[in-house]
Image 1 (tube, protein in one colour):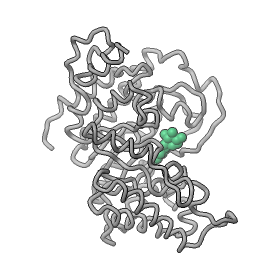
Image 2 (image 1 turned 135 degrees about the vertical axis):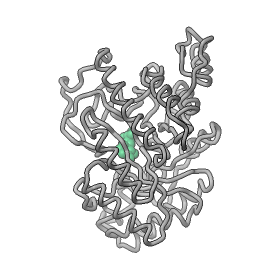
Image 3 (image 1 turned 180 degrees about the vertical axis):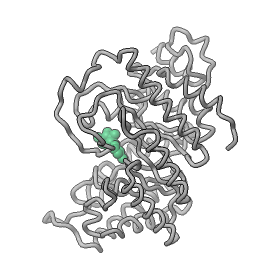
Image 4 (image 1 turned 90 degrees about the vertical axis):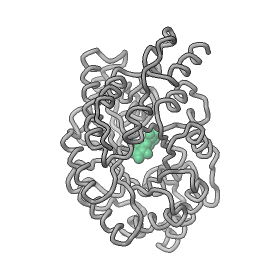
Length: 380
Ligand code: XIL
């Protein structure tokens, strides 16, 4: 308990010496007061953090980040598990957390083919519902959820992962039933429910040209119809060799030309080998466990950690370079132990993808990011 209090106190004033042994020297800066000046710096909260069970992560989330995203509690399956039954308990706690800590609260996500309960797109016989029924369900869902948090959420991921890597529409139930129209409809309903809220389209693998071009076509179509779209979110579930810095930069530059802001919405960088190339963020990929692709169960060797640090830092340098168009960078989890990458795309591995380690200590990259930020001219 004493250590926890010290850690909490240290995180509220800085990153240095925050082991609980050295509490007198915690006077360095935090991410939120440094890089957070240029763009929002966010983290996700999982249910254990929102309900306060994981106090150490809560302290980091509150003190180091000025934005929060919900890892699971606002997905349709969690918040609207059955027709006519909503469960807002955790989502309410999530929004309260952000307000308590003066954070920009992000909603994730309104329309997604995954974490989608069966009832949403099917009838009692399990067949696809008609376009009219699906439109009505989408409208009701979006009005209810966005409406509940009206004025309290800075922006919503309205549609998540609607495209395949080749730029065609993903064959989701939404697309199957409503065709391309499901996206403009979702944006329209979200805007009607909270006209002041920012609205985002979110996806992965934007370094792949056909996919990026399809997303830019979508942005232009929404703009042509005068539908609100503020930003495109690039998820950012990174691998050792993919995407490259150049690939991500190309996506940032191309999106900026389409007159939308850019967000890095789900950043994590695996330290582990990939079972397959170019997995992007396909959430339900599930490869068989093999010890040869889980080499660091007892900790990261120094050289691997150093390479990881440089790699992560190089992405932050890129984000700082494009701070005129990037409005938010969100880490997909607080500390390594929380990360979904321990279970994706292979279950049961030990990964090191985030900025804080399993003991809730800042990794060396945190200080490097802060230094890099302090050396960045404030010309925003
Ligand atoms: C992930 C969560 O982190 C996991 O806990 C859950 O089991 C599956 O979903 N793209 C997204 C996120 O938009 O919502 C996903 O989150 C990761 C991929």
